[in-house]
Image (tube, rainbow, N blue to C red; front, side, top):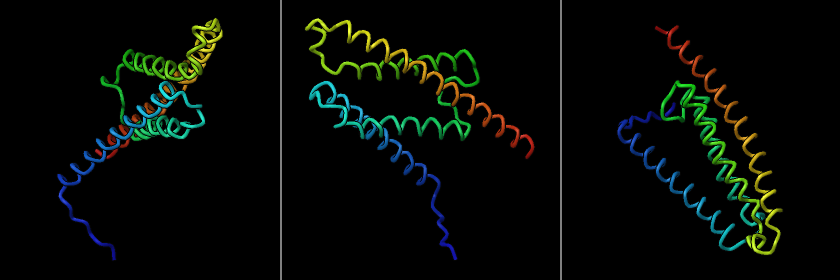
Length: 158
């Protein structure tokens, strides 16, 4: 026989809120750790690769899980203009983050290899922008399908 857990909903909501805040704090600390290791300590990527994978993996998990549940991450829902702007803004932000990994040695800016660094930045930015925009658009399509399915199910239940 299963043990019944008759816990007050307010307690559950508060516990979930605390866990959500803790998760946000951990992701923030993880981001700071990545930035410090990359730009301050100038360690090779292999030394902070796991942190980077965890950071981006958590973000992707939240987005995919939210979209499959029919929840939008945008502030104003159901407006195609806002969704397209959201995709563009997130794509550009992601692209800038990925492009900065091209700066392996900041001294290149001062030693005459600036064009090589600029070409790497531009190349990685274009590649990352294309991939992230395609991924976000794909997830948005999944979100729309899932949302319509949920709405249809709710309409059928009534």
